[in-house]
Image 1 (tube, rainbow, N blue to C red):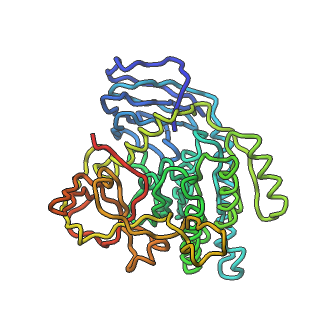
Image 2 (spheres, one colour):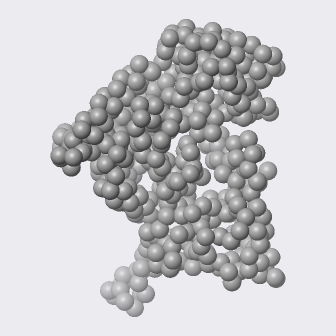
Image 3 (tube, rainbow, N blue to C red):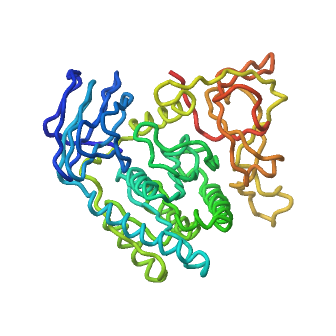
Amino acid sequence: MSYGGATAMTGSASSSIRQVKLEMESELRIEVGHDSALRLRLLNGSAEIFGSELAPGIWLSFPSRLKFAVFTWYGATIEMDGSTETDYTADETPMVSYVNVHAVLDGRRSRAKASSSTDSDASQGPRVMVVGPTDSGKSTLSRMLLSWAAKQGWKPTFVDLDIGQGSITIPGSIAATPIELPIDPVEGVPLEIPLVYFYGHTTPSNNVDLYKALVNELAQVLENQFARNAESQAAGTVINTMGWIEGTGYELLLHAIDTFKANVVLVLGQEKLFSMLRSVAKNKPNVDVVKLQKSGGVVSRNAKVRQKARSYRIREYFYGLTNDLSPHSNIANFSDLFVYRIGGGPQAPRSALPIGADPVANPLRVTPVNIDSNLLHTVLAVSYAKEPDQILSSNVAGFIYITEIDIQRKVITYLAPSAGELPSKYLIVGTITWLET
């Protein structure tokens, strides 16, 4: 989430320890400087960052370029040590409406839990889908709703369908993970047991059918898990979506609402989208469409800034948010790995088609890819598939980054999050690339 606007703005030259007093229901919006970290702690009162409470007196270290907001319901004093690109206070926020939504969702969870032993339909907790245009604060609102629910003792499931940025894992993926504790203000969403499917591109327009197929796979796996776990079913889901909301993007949004059986749709920052979804919901009596104001601190990011954000997310996967991870460089023979691409290739040979018909590309075809220099600097997913024909329906174990390809020796050098053999010899390539800096 990016912030803009300024009152009492502090430039990057300011690096001394300083205090900021926040009045009730106000927030301090911060963009950490580009070259250094920022330390922050709560001196007195109570405050939270995206729904997660700050422990009093404990210093938190935020890495460079991070953007966040410290909100207080009753008043607080914040102390900062380090440089900021910008920091300013705001007393006009939509937080009251957000927490009111949380209260309604909390009531639904309680009713679902009470009904779990008597009525399977009533035992379904809220399935919340957060929608809106690019840079409207969808991922931030999702974090708040998840953290507030976890604080109440629930374990909701976070689903991220935004392949452009990626809140759970790297861009180009859709993923889900249970949230058992309020989300850490610095580290973000926990990655212990995510369920990840690799789409391989940062926009659905590259392969709409593949995007739909993976959404279907993820939804079905979660459905099966909920059927076996009444606690997870009552806690429900919070689903973050992409910012493409027109044309094909809108159709994919409707597909996701139906596929995940969303019963609450929260629309951020666009009247037209709210009106369109409300009209659709008239034929879906169990779906509530709610319009919410986006935060005044949200600003639009251009394509270059979004590309940089994707690059940071990939680097964070391998090295950690503060370079606290140590990825391993590994070498493998070409013959030890099998790389596949999903999409492309003819559906059938021309001889098998009606006279005059042209073969068309099959968007779901799994095609072998030769290992050559074209794979240099690509990010590949490691599939859990046991056979190539299972790749489309299998989730992934993680990702590797190709750093060197020796054609003569037929060996490939790659970066992996941990040492040891890969959990699978089947790899998936898309159009996700990264230049390590």
